[in-house]
Length: 319
Ligand code: UDP
Ligand code: MG
Image (cartoon, rainbow, N blue to C red; front, side, top):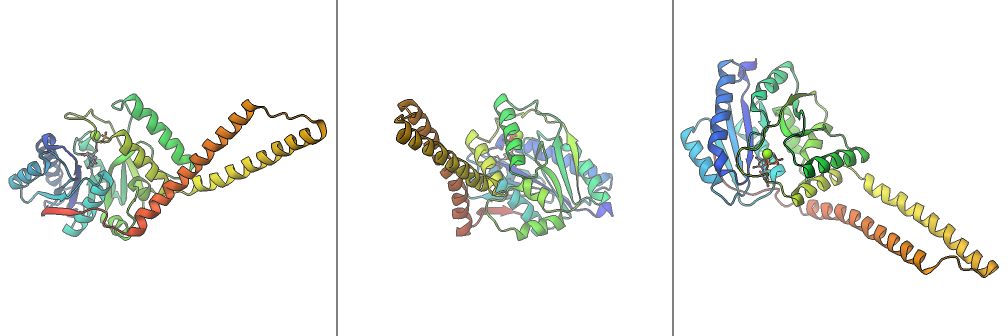
C-alpha cells in the first residue's frame, strides 16, 4: 500500500553550507505533504552526504539534524570523492537504514522538488525506476549546452543508451538498490547503470530552476572526467574504432608507399615533396598519440578498478 512507502531523499552536498537550511526545510515540507496525503509513511527521511566540503556544510547538516533528529540523517566523507560517489553512498546507506525507495536530488534544488509526488505516483503504479527529465537547458551556459550535446552524441555513437537530459534526479526502488549493491566497480556511471539494468522504468518531466546560491560545483575538468568515465565504463567501441582506423591507415600507407616506389623506380620521379611529408607524418603522428590516449583512458580505468580500493571513506555519520 502506498502509505507504507518509506521514502529516503538522498542529497549530495559539496560546499553547500549556505543552502542546507533552506533545502532541508523545503524538502521536509515535501515529505510532510506526502505523508499527509498518505502517499508515504511518516518514517520517511532526508539523508545528506557531505562530499568532503571545505566550508561549514557538515556543521549545517549537524544543525539541521539537531532540529529534526527523526527526519534527517547525515554522512560525512573524509574527502571529496565526487558527486557520483556521494549518490552511491547515499543510496547504499538508505538501504542499510531502511527504505522502500530513494529519490536523489541536488542540494541546490534546481530540480523541481514538487515532482517527487509524481515520482511516488509512478512508483505506486509499479515502476521501479523513475527518471527526472529536464524540459530544456535554459539555465545552462553556452559551454555546458554544447558539451552536453557533444556528450549525448558521443554516447550514442558508442552504443551507450542513456536517458537524454537526465541528470541524477530520479527515484529507484529498494530492489534496484539491491542490484546496485552487487556492482562493486569503482567508476560506476549511474545514469547508464540505471538505464542498462532493466526493470520497469518511466520518466517525469520537470523545469530546471536557476541556482539560488553559489556556483555550479562541477569544474570543466570534472565534467570531462565524468564524460570520459561515462564512455569507458560502458563501451569498448573506441578501442574497436582504433583497430579500424589502424587498418585503414595501414592500407593508405601501403598504397601511397607503393605508388612512391613505382614512381621512383620506373619514372625516376619522386612525387612526395617536403610539404606532403610534413603533413602526412604530423597527421599520423598526432593520430597515433590520440589513439594511445584512448587506450590510456581504459588502462587508467583498469588501474583504478584492479586495486579495489574503497570507493569512498565515511568519516562520520549521524543516523
Ligand atoms: N556535488 C558533490 N560533489 C562534487 C560536486 C558536486 O556532491 O564534487 C553535489 C552538489 O553539492 C550538488 C550536486 O552535486 O548537490 C550537483 O552539483 P551542482 O549543482 O554544482 O551541478 P550542476 O547543477 O551545475 O550540474
Ligand atoms: Mg545545480
